[in-house]
Image 1: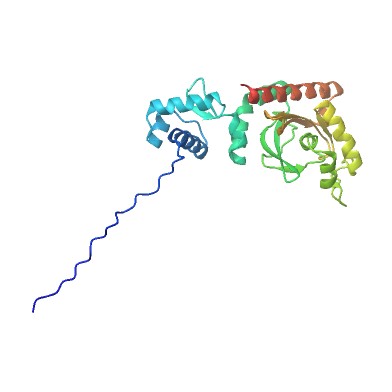
Image 2: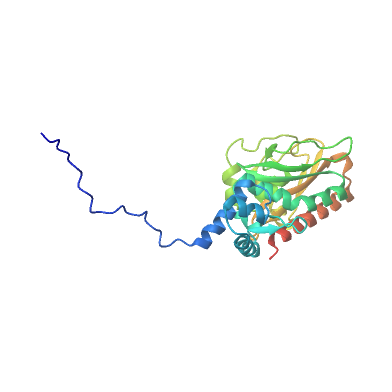
Length: 273
């Protein structure tokens, strides 16, 4: 008896290829790949390194980088010729990456401010109705204000916090601080009523400078100014802080001018075409 072997009938249908996205734009994909690589690495990269990591030709990488540089998504270091994130990435990056970019972009201006004033220089961001320091250069004086980066303070009494609040509406400020016990007193000079806070914020809006005269910490004087992005929004506030007994009336005026001028320089650098 012969063995009966049943062979499967050949399929008439051919394997279907993966669907092709008809809207796919290869050049855009390459540009986004470079941007994603830069965001992931968090550091400046050379054309060679980008080319090797992404498997792109150096000519292609150079053309894409040139375009992104013109649109301010990238910037090029004049000395190393390496490429890093540009000012437009402030609008799309995560908070840590935005802060890293800001620290790098502001460093030359803050160093100049620090060397001129001789006191502690701070940079703060607004977070959960508080200010958080992301950068600090401490005074070399024996008696100095020493608070580590990452420290938080209430927004309503710190000079940098008042700067951010000056870009809020009165209605928003009342909503934040209008509830009972929202304005805790840290010193005898801490503002403890919404009406008094709004009066203070009105002055900040006019002068573009905020003062903390022993409102957060006894014996500490601080003056702050805003750094704005291309949309006129306050992205960080910079300040000078010092022991109050070292800040004479003339120094108060000088410090206010210095911090305002530095903030203006940084703002202009972030807006450069």
